[in-house]
Image (cartoon, rainbow over all chains, first blue to last red; front, side, top):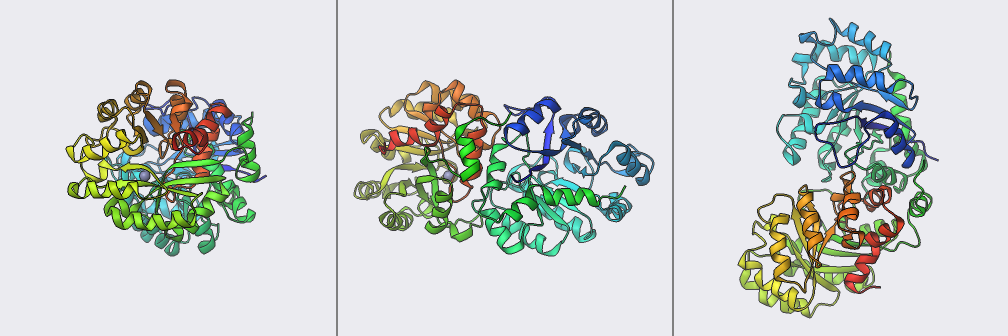
Length: 262
Length: 267
Ligand SMILES: [Zn+2]
């Protein structure tokens, strides 16, 4: 069996829930069991639609005792002091909480994801190999659809142009095939990874892996927005070698999280 | 508990299930402006995906025909003549050239393998209630044809609100709501429930978690058809969404092939 480690799953009660969701970690684990998913890097709904400060505490508390769930945090600008007095304080809070990955939601949380805001922070992230997850829909507030993802890829390009050694995971790409956007970025930036939870492109995995190998793709489900079975069968039944499925399914994410030094 | 569905277990083991000869009621054909397709989205590439996923047939509206019908239909006609049991076609209507419509429908009647009409009002910027569509809709009614329409929530061109009227006026045609009126679910499901001749089609809608369950509960699995815009979206992804929905394997059979077999006469 190919082990599946979901890089993008969430539980909890959201302001606008999809028709089906997991209100609690137990419900999320039941869903994972139903669809053969082994582990998940998780956020909770409060991190997305309540406050990152409230949500970051909640996700750690709720995930505690669930060995298959690994909490991730939302990142905020250091200048407001909401996440401790310094980047070192943030890193030691992460170590204490067992958090090894961060998400950036610049549109929701209203900040500029760039060197002006995060220069010294990202230098530390590079030093400590901390992966940053960025939804492509988060480049600007109030936009959705094609315009939003177009700007999302531009943001990835700008950010990695400034911090080429930052580990960045682009998530929530539009289901309209995005290869023309991301292939140049994959070729230029060695530490760019793609969460494939919404990569529905017909024969996309096969075509990508033949050209680039499997090191840059991470299995994800984007649960609860997406039913888990879709991304699961898409990977398990892709026309790629088993070694590639293992890397995408869990190997790449396991390595990224293992390399984090806190 | 792992998904107990026999079909899910077979897809996990083999990438397909012998008992499920999948039919895509919503496919396209060939390259298109806004997307890179491996293998140009043409027959060989589509057949690879179909074979791997146990899909026996795809009913296609060639992209080219959505712009320039005669050019696009000719492309697909050739594919159908090479693979008559794997591909079928929708005859595409471009309402922005109303004077060409009559001749186009005559050509449709002479074209083997084309089994229904395809309307794409959102892209053609013409409301489905426009007089430019009337001859095509009357033709479909008179000949009892399936009509696949693009339907998108809150669209002024093809939102589900417009479909009640169109379906009631053409009771002998069968309307497949492509994308199931994506996003305007309550109204779309209500239209499908109220009209015997309106079906929900799953393309893109399948990736909204929990929506398939709602369709089956509120409308019934006999009114839901599988489609995935092949070659756009991988059938494994789309089928995976159907297989993990909390519905019965009987419902899954209805959705993945039985309803299409009945509608297109391929039983
Ligand atoms: Zn379509």
